Length: 329
Image (tube, rainbow, N blue to C red; front, side, top):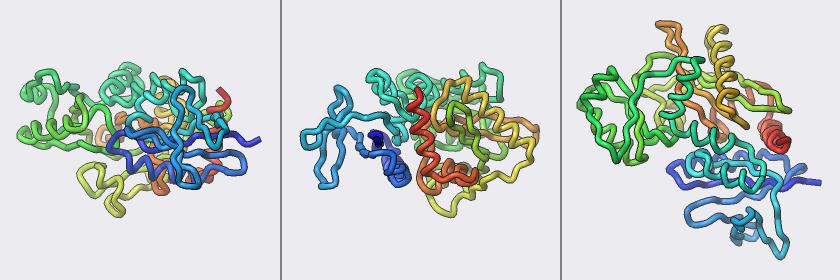
């Protein structure tokens, strides 16, 4: 008997368009012979399933069910396809945990922690597994002094919203005069801002997921941007960035990144597909942690789909594995 899967798309944040694109790819590649897929749009205006007739059916949020032509549809699992709020920051995860409905991503606590880059950095640094860049965490409703920040950190620095993705609101600051405008830009996106020292090196990222209870590490990707850093334009504009999968890096570097990602996945209690981003500082042969993405992009050319194909798998196999793994819980 086919299982009912809710594919949750949309979201409340600036990553809405990216979320919609990812959900379209996920929907296309879920095996319809095994699963009945109901794509549900979650926005500030409502939670709705759009039927084949174009009519919107509101989700009953008391138990996350649909009533279609008098039939109550319950879901065996939820495939979360939302980047940003509320699909990546723990909010939906907590809701589904209370309803005891399996879902494909990390749990509420891990999602909330990893979504906040500053708090995640502090936890990762405390583990002693990998280097973490020096940083300062500031808040919109608390005073801060840029002179104090620059005494603690050396330029250049990155200024970014502590909670957010796709590099929205992010700036690279090379001079003291650029710091305040960069902070103001980041505060337009979030009430918390992370300022961290720039690490010169190669940006390499690694996807991981569990299959049949065993952790699978995907081939790594090196991101080579023609811009100063991997910003929104570099991520989503064809030709601006070259992404090499598998990365053309020495085997000892690749092995270190995969082993480090594996340790962090376990220590942070991750579930589902997670992408770990790192900087390899060639000058000093040191690996630095950048961030954890618990809802990595799933458009056709996104990094994880590239890595899945490089591993010799299809997206249909991959998404089926994620669904079946969450059903094991």
